[in-house]
Length: 180
Image (cartoon, rainbow, N blue to C red; front, top):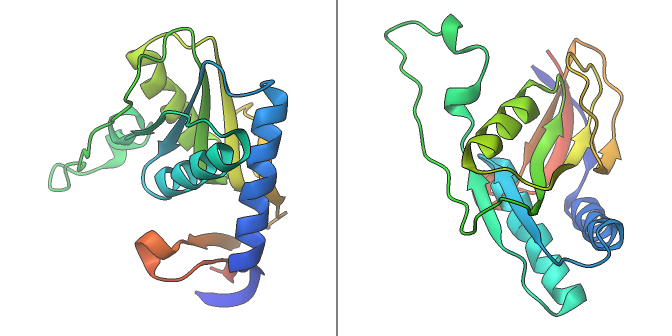
């Protein structure tokens, strides 16, 4: 797999998250009854960063949680018995019933990860609504899912891969596009 280009550097990621934070506040007319939930792994760090930016803007904190979609994935039947899925658990600090939940992920691709995230949320309660925030939307949807808040749209071919690397996980801050 060869790297073609860096499509977002550290500064561009920071700007995109700041813009998304403003859009979330504007769209929801503040942060009343809002909860941010990140999809493991990188979605959690993006969710925490969004919550920090929102707190800087609004002067109030917003609850942040994390959801593990491992058991909600539709490709678990393809796993062999030797490779049991590693479940890390979900942690949402408030009841999401009747809350506006902003689900956060790094890349929106087929929509299957987001569907699994929504299924996991629905097992926790009945939110008033679920909104989706992603750092990158690369297209190629297999399910009718659309992000409400997008850092950057990056049209890709099926022979390309988008890789999001974050300081907390990878020790570097960038989004790259690769040929498979």
